[in-house]
Length: 194
Ligand code: IDP
Ligand code: MG
Image (cartoon, rainbow, N blue to C red; front, side):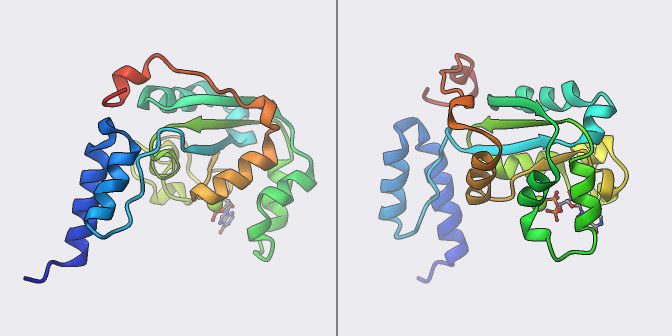
């Protein structure tokens, strides 16, 4: 009987997740047994999250940090910095051809931002979901932009859009020695099998 690929990948993802307690190797072995590629549950995944100058000016830093903390993610890097225009351009290099690029980069470098690295399982994708859509008016209530912002040009927060982008952004904004490797004792109560 033919089994739809979507079913197989869902089953593999489920198995991968639930075998996390047996370790990442178990998840990979399950993927191999099902003949599919399974993204291993990885509690060390990291995302670059930046609170833009509007978030700092509006006093939203604590509120936003609290959402990531409460979700169970681990803060491994944090600093306040006023980015140079060059830094803003490097950060948004993929948008260089867009008409709003000059305004965007001038805005980002107009005052202090809070740059952070958050760690935990699926943090890149979940971080984006917690942030909401680029246009706050299209962001669901309950998301950061949906609750705290109204226009795209003042949407208060940046979050990496892929694991690869996250690695590049973390490297751009942080020295390795500014990142902290430590055991969060709360992990026992957040993850299974830890
Ligand atoms: P994202 O922040 O949701 O990942 P991107 O498309 O990567 O959205 O755009 C980066 C930032 O550029 C947005 O957060 C927003 O501040 C700004 N931006 C994106 N599109 C527009 C636009 O059409 N007009 C003005 N600013 C924009
Ligand atoms: Mg983006």
